[in-house]
Length: 141
Image (cartoon, rainbow, N blue to C red; front, side, top):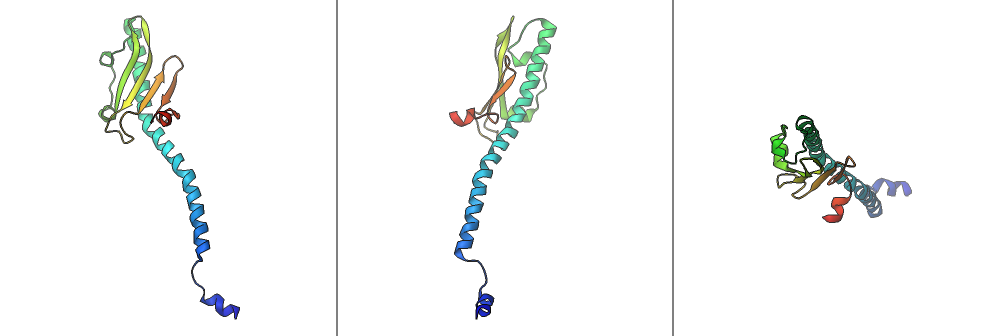
């Protein structure tokens, strides 16, 4: 009799389906935040690369003239147009005898992650912070 019942039964029970759904939900709850952090980091890497080029160009300009600049137009740097469409760069502080304190990049509307995301390079510490780098953007947005 058991063999007859076993042959008739096809498919999964409701409990089996629910167990699978719970397992998938737990895995998704772990994977989605990790993936979004990865995407943020990838988006901010474009700004970090350009900030590094700006800082290098600032130092080269200082070696040439003996003066620190805080004007991007004075630098001989060729920034990709797609980067300029997504990010606005700014040199904070500096000018003349005073070196700048920070270089920042603020995202524009064309950036996939949204407008107003900030990536900062602190010149004294040599460290990046902000969007896609640490949790600072999670606390402010």
